[in-house]
Amino acid sequence: MKLSKSLRTRSAGIAAIAAAALVLSACGPDTSGGGSGSDGGDAVDYEGVEPATEVTFWTNHPGASIELEKEIIAKFEAETGITVNHVTAGANYEEVAQKFQTGQVSGDAGDLVVLSDANWFTQYLNGSITPVDSILEALGEETDSFVPALYNDYNYDGVHWAVPYARSTPLFYYNKDVYEQAGITEAPSTWEDVAENARKIQDLGTIGFAYPEESEYPAWTMANLVWGYGGAWSNEWDLSTLTSDETVSALTFAQGLVNEGAAAVVSGDPSTAFSAGAAGQVIASTGSLRGILEAATFEVGAAFLPAGPAADSGIVPTGGAGLAVSAASSPEKQLAAAKLATYLNNAENTAFFSAGTGYLPVRTNADMSSVYAENPLFEVAVEQLELTRSQDFARVFIPGGDRVLAQNLQKILSSGADVAATLEAAQTEIQANFDRDLKDKVG
Image 1: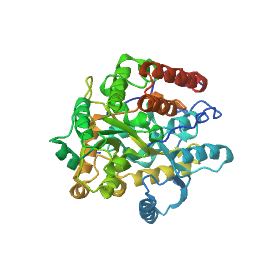
Image 2: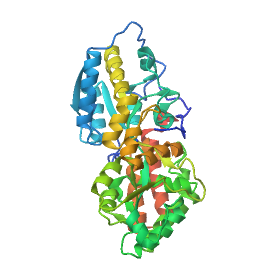
Image 3: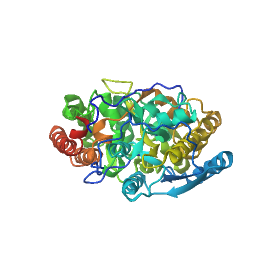
Image 4: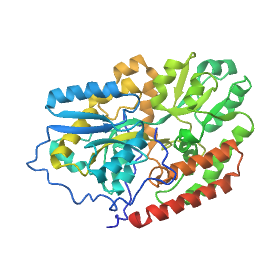
């Protein structure tokens, strides 16, 4: 069976309130699966089916959330009588995804699983997850209160394949003390402002702006810069935008800041360099906010991601992980799994989870007032959801795409590689991956 040519619904998703994905392996995940995607038309009939009394939840406890998950699950068990096998299925998103994929063959897979923005689509292609729409309808669970941009990230061909859970976006962080020393009076609103501020900060002997290295998902955070210039890593399955004049211009700008000494690629998580005072400005996950505030010895500022010369909206990439239901589970288990999923991310629990991790609330009706009172900067992260955009297919859907982008961004920023030629090489490699792994399935 070949997938429909109609492409996945994308949404800029305006929300009143309200989200790090890992690179794929060198060869990319297996997409041979035994099929070419689940079929939303083959929906299970849940009429008369009751949720199972036991369900297995596979997670990597995103954001060191194991204790938070335990507390929510204990309440769920008490309220529903459903026993939850709470399994640490991996240390990160990729390990969980690989184990889940293997479990489809062995018959040992979780009923509910945490899948990141960069690996849920592969599980969909393999037929490993099932649509959630009909399950939620059978349970009488409403979805209108999900933050639209975050829920619609899992929409392909008009069917949702997961619900949002540990979601994040990048956020702009700046050192207010360094700003004051440099005579900078307000947060930047454009990338030109960032560059001007970086030059002033560099004069103080501090890195003006910190770029992420290859292992720190540069294609995620730098999508903001590329989109602001009118470029993209791809336009759905079309990779020509990767080598467009707009994308070349954006990365030439980024490379120029490094060449003039106003910016640098830092080792490890850029938020660590920022928290230590080594860099005056950085873009890092909203999930890093709590850690930054705890580690920094200076006053931290947070602002929306900068606009570019071509765009000031739809420039914030979504990220993080959602909750998917295993296609191999029985209808009873699927109902129980979906019941747990919507309990984990209901209005009360998403606020609790956000307060404890720094991830974004995924419900528009979540009461975040106490969180904002304790940490006003978190409100900036939530308000920025109005500017979000789902990520480009080249990074999150094409096997190995994120890895290829990261490697070539490293060459551009750290080795001074020719921008246009490097992007052409990246396009060629990602196109080969698409042709090998996906062309026959999504063509």
